[in-house]
Amino acid sequence: MPALASHRKPRTRGRTTPAVGLTTVALASVTLLSTQSATAAPAAPKPSIEEVQKKVDALYRQAGTATQQYNKAKAASAEQRSKVDALLEAAAKRADKLNETRRELGSYAAAQYRGGSIAPTATFFLADDPQSYFDQDQLMARMTSRQQKAVADFRTQQKEAAAKRAEATKSLETLTASQASLRTSKQQVQTKLTEARTLLSQLTAEEKARLAELERKKEAEAERKADELARQQATKEKAAADEAPKTNTGSGTGSGTGSGSGYSSKAEKVLAFARAQIGKPYVWGATGPSSYDCSGLTQAAWKAAGVGLPRTTWDQVKVGTRVSTANLRPGDLVFFYDDISHVGIYKGGGMMIHAPKPGANVREESIYYMPIYGSVRPS
Image (cartoon, rainbow, N blue to C red):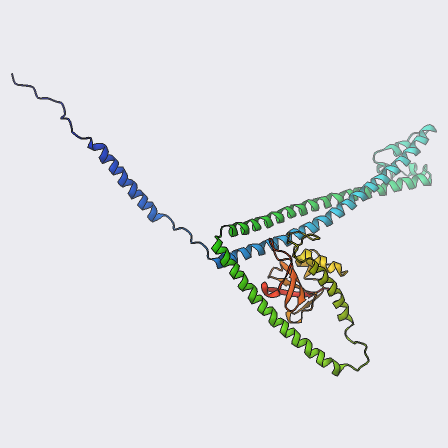
């Protein structure tokens, strides 16, 4: 009988299949990674130090603008709060007078009750709305002139009390809007300052050194321009002094110097105050005495000379006489940037005293450190 063929598969001496599978997976992974690397967007290049400087300056400027918005909202909120308080006090006084008149009317009604004639006059006195009885000529005729005056006063006081309550309610709504604007401006300032600090914190020590060098070059250029302005002003003043004897009659009256000397006296007080603040920190929204923002310093300095200035740069630029840079005198206010978000006090020689920005102290600096918008001589 022939032998049956075996149906068993021959044994293999090595387990090659898994190895082949792993190799295939590895190749697929390499292919996938290569494809992803090829299609991935390239990393953004790191900004140069010059770009970082511009970005930081822009953020500080935006924070300065937001600070002025904050100052404006804060001033408006304080003004509105005072108005609301006054209106509420006036409304309370109106209510007191109304209650007093109501008590007087009640006393008339009680007297009629005791006299046995409660109706219809007492009904009028005790009514919540005496106005509904006003057109009854017969009833009015039965009232004394004093009683009629009391009723007339009651009507007037009702109207006045209602008007004051309505005005106070409207003012409270305005106050709420001002406080909302205040919170928004505060958040904007904090956001911009956080962005600037974050950007600076990411710099290496070498990059910080290069940034500091750029700042020194910027300051040196600004001081060079200040020196040039100082020379021009000195030449102009000398020419004016040389011309004065020719036009002066020798009377010794000092003609034409009265208003100038008056301003100079105020300017001396302004600058004396400003110099005393040098070294104190810039804090946005601050008005002294331990710290200032830019317009807080100028406001406080001119207050020391007896002149009241508004709170914001946007309002301060509208006070006084506009003057050119070439004709600046000590005490004048110099404003910066197209949005008028910064201000300093001119001290002469192309220099100013100002509260620069967060992280810096009140200091003297060239007026050319920032782009000049214009200048004002307060009056």
